[in-house]
Structure formats: structure tokens, C-alpha cells
Image (spheres, each protein chain N blue to C red):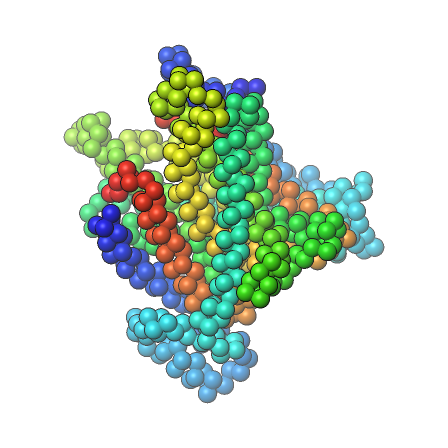
Length: 316
Length: 297
């Protein structure tokens, strides 16, 4: 285990370097003269502003020097300043991050809370007849874009539950109950597809385990179907589901970008989308870097947890 | 109807019978048949859009703004008096075009690249795999949004970006197949006989990896439709007035409470399209992958 952790941590360094380089390059794939485009934001194309922006981003230096300059800031926790309002990029990200974390955690709770139990139920004898229905319904959920589900939820909410808030955000620390209630529709919209994905994983995994010898033995002993499923099959079947849930949790951070826009939640996703429309490239760059490092660290944590849950897994 | 879950319990009975041809097996898989039907329908709608659409997709009907579905406008009209049905029909061209374009581009770059990496091996292989790992580390939708925003929002840029982000998947599969089959006797025999690299790759290695690649491509098509819709929803894909399903939902949102048809029909179109490719991909995987006995799932 210790060797495995050490290896994973060592591999983290080149990965993070690569991520930082790609994030840095986003600003440099913009076609045309970068300074002119960046100045377009402030609409003041005079020579003084030109020189200021060149100096701020070290645009007169070779690309590699610019990268190293940016990186030395990143390593000190400084992602630069917003091109639009001059505020600190990391400050904005840190303000928005808790909203996104709350949204993804709520979606994950909803997705696992619905997907895993339904996946287990779907392999019980009684449910086997409705296999095509289970498949079509779960695929329909997977096929529905979260922003569409979210839009429909907002309208249904406005029509049938007018007292229930659907838009806007209440900080969790100010009023936890209100905060959870406000975010529920967004979390439902984001979690719906993931719950169907987890249902399919759970179902496939359960079917595989139910065919195993030790389950046949349990059945031969005369154990009830319920006991076979809950005592013998479930724990083993859930191991691959944990891996799938980890992947989906990381994907949720990507999915939150669009859903935060739909529900007007002030998270990192909305920050990125706003930055894109204001052409605030330093903010885009910083947010992409932050969210990707976030994803890498979550992946690492999930892998390590997975290793703890199932010590049989041998890594190459 | 045949229940896919049933095979789980009779794998022996299955294998003792003569294996039916892949086409027969595909035809018997309801998921593949329904999926193929939906996809064929979509392709027909996209191809015959000018014939099927009752009106032009950007044709304005003054005095008919935001009208509910009627005989003249079966899906209703939008805030500018455009026929939603015609826009949904023409939107299929954008959606399918973006999906096919980016997946074909990704496969066309990824498969040769992966095969080359597998063949060359050594440092190049190590380096390439690290780069792919790094690309996979990015939340795909986030990198897509950032890249499209940087390159400038347009359909070609969107296709290019999505192709770049899905390409590693094809490359890794092709590389895996190359590494797995190169040491096998029949490939070694072909090498010993002096077959050209080109022949080895195209006649001996790639046929082995085609089934999983076809499955991956089909499932990717459904993902790309969702990504295109999402980016167009944010205003980063197809630009107005060209009709795209995601863009229609985005602009219809503000009228949604009084005119739900503005959003519901393009939303359903996305769901049907994604469902079609998902069902087809599922069915293909079950019939093409001989290792998979398990149905459903």
C-alpha cells in the first residue's frame, strides 16, 4: 500500500505540470494578436495600456519564460488578476468553490441514494420481467441533458410548487436548511443522469456476482433470495460501483458548469461561463487549472479508498 | 420479448449451440434494432430536412409569434414566429453533423496514431500515454468550453475541439490492440513472410480492434450530441439564426412558463437522438463482444 501511494504521488508531479502547461496555453491558442484582443475588453487601445498588459503578462518574453513566470505565481497560490475588474483570480475561485462543492455533493448523494438501491432491486427475481423497461427508463435518464431537465424542473416548480424556491443561492453557513432547499432542483437535475448510470453499474455488477459459486452455495443452503442478495452478493457487487461513483463524482464538477448557469448558482461553473463572455482569459485559465487539479486530487483519493476497500486489487 | 438478463443463467447452453452470425445476433437484439431504427430515422430526417420541414427554419411568420401547436405549426412557433417543427428538423443536421464530424475526425486521427504508438513502443509510447493521461485529467466539458471560447464560438471550432478531446480514447484502444496482437503467431508469421507494415496493420491488427472501436464510436456519438447541445445552450456552438437544439432551449427558456413547447420539443429531440445512439451502442456491445455474456446492465 505504501509503495502504491508513493508511486501515485510521484506520478502526480508530471501530471500536474502537464495540466498547468495546457491551462497556460489556453490563452495562447486565441487566434490574432493577443494584446489587441485582451485590450478589446477595456476598449482603451492606447499605447500605455498596451505596454501595461504586455508587462503584466510578460508577453514580450519567450513563451517558456511566460509559462515559468505564471507557474512561479501559481506555486505561490497566485493565479494572476482578472482582466476585466482586476480582482485576484484565486480570490474569486475560493469564493465560488463552496457553492460548487455543495452542488456536487448533493447531486452525488441523490445519485447514489437512488441509483444503487434501484440497481439492487432490479436484479431481484420479481423485477427481472421488467428488464427492458428498466433499461429504457435508465437510458432515457442518461439521454436527457441536465440543462433540459433543469429547465423543465424550474417550470414545473413555478407552476405546481410556487412556494418552493428554484433559483438563486443561500450560503450554507448562513441558513443550512434554506441552502439545501434552494439547491435541491439543481442537484436533482445534475444527479438524475448519474443515478441512472450508477443503477446500470450496480445492476451489471450484481448480475455478475449472483452468478458466482459462493452465491450458488448460499442458494443451495436454502438461503432466501433476500438474504442471498443482501448478505452474500451486495458487498462484493458494490466494489466496482465505488469506482464508477468516483468517476461520476469527478464528472459532476464538469457538469456543474452548465447547470450553475441554468439555476443562477454563483459557483465556479458560472464564474467560468461569465469569464468566457467577458473574455476574461486569466480567470478562465485559473479556473480551468483549479478545477482540473481538483479532479486529479479527487481521482487520487477515490483510487486510494478503492485500494483500502478491496486489497485484492493489484496495480500495474 | 427475449429478456437479455436470461442469458446470464445459461452461458453453457448458449455456447454449445452453433454461434449465429453477427448479423443474426444483432437482428435478435432488441436494443440494437430499436437503436438502429431511431438512428436511421434521424439520418433520414436530417438528410431530407428540406422535403420534410413544412416551413423554412428561419422563415418568420408575422402575427404568429409564440403560438401553441396547431395544424399549420405542429410544434408551435417561437418568439419570432418561426415554426418549431421545421427548426427541430433542420436542427438534426447540426446535431448529427457535429457528432459524425467530430467522431470521424477523432477516429481518423486517433486510430493511426495509436497504432503507430503501439508499433514504435519505447519512449514514444511512454510519452504519448502520459500526454493522454494529462488530457483525460481535464473535465472534458470544461476544457471544451474553454477551448471553444478561446478559438471563437462556431460549429467547425466545436467539432475540432470535441475531436481533439475524444481522439485519445481511439488512440489508446488502437494502441492496446497493436500491443496485444503484434506478438501473436499469425502477426509474427505475416512479418516473417515480409508483409508490409501497412498490410500488417490493416489486414491483421485493425480487424481485431474494429468491434470495440465501433462500439466506442457509437457511444461517443451520443456523448458528442450532448456536448454540442450543452455548448450551443451556453451560446458557444452553432450561432443563431442557424437552428440547433441546444440553442433553441437556451433562447426558449425565458418564455418557458407561458410557452413550454419552445423548450420541450428540442429537448425531446436531443433525448431521442442520444437514446438512439445509446441503445445502438449497447446492442452492438452485446453482440460484438464475445466475452460479454451478461445482458442488460
